Length: 220
Image (cartoon, rainbow, N blue to C red; front, top):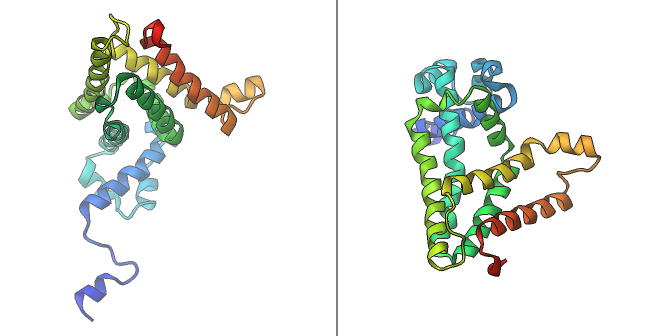
């Protein structure tokens, strides 16, 4: 049997370090989101991946190192999605709407991301301090908002004197709350806030609220 044929046999582990690393991070992210940093177990993560415990420690050092890598990956995914929108090439009002709509959809579709951010806030953000990459990737998000905001001000469609970081805060707050508090709101007020109808309404309201916050009155 040739090496090529042998490599295609079921169960044979391929030599794909980067693929293995991605697989570990994907599984670990779900475990951290479900159980938190303290509750997640390397044994469980290894069992659900194509990696051994020894390999996990080789790639990430320890459980905390794996957790930081999972955080980095979670933020990288959302920032790469924002970059693909290419909002800087759009008219400011259209770019703003597209960015807010994307953020709402991303957060709604990636509940593990929301849970991991909540967990890191429980830890007062101290694990983020270990990662220069996290700061760099998120600074790009503020720069992107700053660019579209400056363009909107220059064209006379956005109000002056706003802070791009605070704009990002407001967008994040509305989209984050939609996931983080969906269950409690649904139980407390007897309405399924996760239904297709509710989500469509909340998505449009979120876009409209941010739009009205930035746009001059004559463009509302």
